[in-house]
Length: 438
Image 1 (cartoon, rainbow, N blue to C red):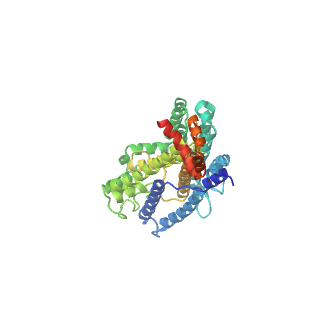
Image 2 (image 1 turned 90 degrees about the vertical axis):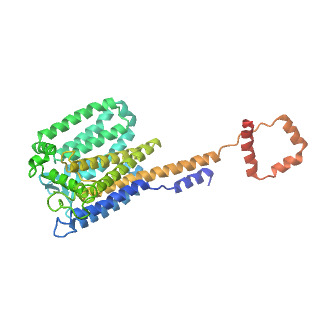
Image 3 (image 1 turned 120 degrees about the horizontal axis):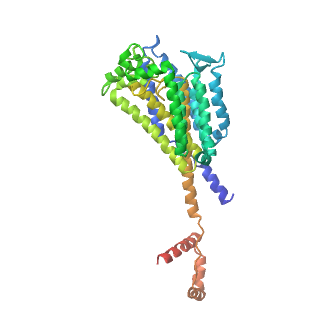
């Protein structure tokens, strides 16, 4: 085995490490979610731990899926980018198939798996981020220079949004468009050229919100929930009362009053309000800080990947960071009354089936990105160290006087030849340096 083969074998043996800050934030949010699901849902069913047991089952399956994602090479995932895009459209169409699609409160967003229902848009978020990351790698220069390359992902996102609006799911539609715009900007798109589609998208989504009467009622109730406290403003007014009761340190874990049939969806969409009531301002700051750490670490990992020319990994980190940060911002904003009511869960904390599963998969992908980044950095450090050791020795010019002295002293030449090989090479490496210093 030659030196190059041995060096390649040594590099292949070098593994990576998962980012500890990222892993810590994920574990902390997941653990806090288990506690708050147990507390917020304990009075909702005849069995006090029904929702907790269900949440733990989905969490266990989600962790298993995350483990698979953490052990899968990203280059393997990238090979299936076109299949993943087709999967996005298939998942959004299958909800309209009779017998497979399931309707809840007039919305067809789920497929019936028999033992549970699965909200397909949660899987679409992950698949779409992976596909868009691959697209930005393949057309990175064109996206910045030409209109067609920039408009293609916007057209794909628009087609997905049309299918989502038919369900209807306005909140996920807005989130998908925001993720697309954010990833394009981080992928190097020309900002002046991007401004026109952004303005058009904002106008179109605003018009859709105004045209639908029930969406307009949500907006007006958001402006003043107390004007119709028992009607359209019921959810928000009770959420604000829960937040207000928490004050600085909360009323204590398990002592929430609003979760006792006053606050709808206390264990899903409005779990942050229950947390604010029981843990107070301190608890809400902890949650916000953990999300900031998770998103910030995702963006930092993404930037490091791009710096090392690992663009696919970097764009995945950017996409997941945008998804988690924006969805958590919207969910918290709804609970605090700074945004109109939307049916978006709080990632890693809210109870749910499909949301828990796919958020775990996304976290597994993000941890895989951090693993491969650390592995690449460690291998690069080994290569740089090896290249420094393998630099050829500089040639030493021997003056004529030195040659004459060598002829006059053969015994000294013989002694030098019998010296250890390492000592001889070291002298050759040092002597030119000392000569230049002189």
